[in-house]
Amino acid sequence: MKDVNFVVLTGLSGAGKSTVSKVLEDIGYYSVDNLPLAVISKFIEVLFDSNSEIEKASIVVDIRSYPRDEMFNFIKMLKENYGGVILFLEADEDILIRRYKETRRKHPLGEDLVESLREERGLFLNVKEIADIVINTSDMNVHSLYQTVEDYCRRTVHRSISITLQSFGFKYGLPQESDLVFDVRFLKNPYFIESLKLLSGMDTKVKDFVFSDKDTYVYVEKIKDFLGFLIPRYTKEGKKYLTVSVGCTGGRHRSVALVESIYKFLKKDNEDLIFIKHRDIDR
Image 1 (tube, one colour):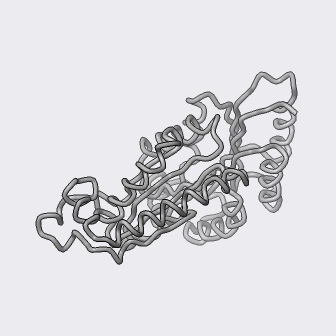
Image 2 (cartoon, helix red, strand yellow):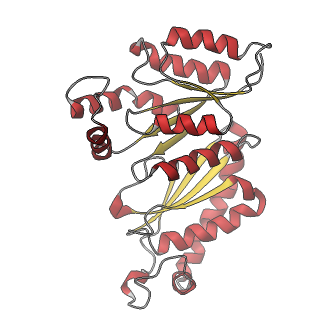
């Protein structure tokens, strides 16, 4: 069978699939959207035919795809039989409601928007579980979503695993896309130091304060050791994407400082594989 760089784009209505489909087109993917599953099957046959000139392709399979009761098994088949990378997009309910109200579009499942969104989320639970990449677009604008997807696709074509390190604040919620979560709320908090309160973990003064706590060094070394053990084994198993989240109370000081330290450690051997994100640093 012909080798094709193949992405299955799926997820919740209003989460940004149309935008991501355009991103994939811009970076050279042949993108197909809103087709019945039977027609997609025919496209797959053509795509993987030895005479096909298409080397990169993306297919959108979502709640509009018929028949709906076959959607999960179809997506699973694309992953297992054709090596499709499952890219799943989601967003928080209030964000999806706001987006629908702004566009004044009807949800594919019915007139009652809230009920339809919840029904759809339930239908996609199994799909999300087998996804290779899960992106929550709640806090993303079009440009940041574009950049995130472009980075994932461009930098992982010839690599076996891509790692995202992100800081966050527990007060703003746990990042749903996390594979691993480390809690640093037990460390000394710069927030209560007047001269440091308005700074962030990117500032040297805050970093120095955080690492003046001996527990910080011990904890960071344990995290590094754990990741050094785990990442090669994830890679060997075939895992392509890993999201490591480090959280403090507000996501501005301690978590940022530790993510920066872990990033420097990991990028020594994997510089073009490591992504860094400070989710709540500006809140």
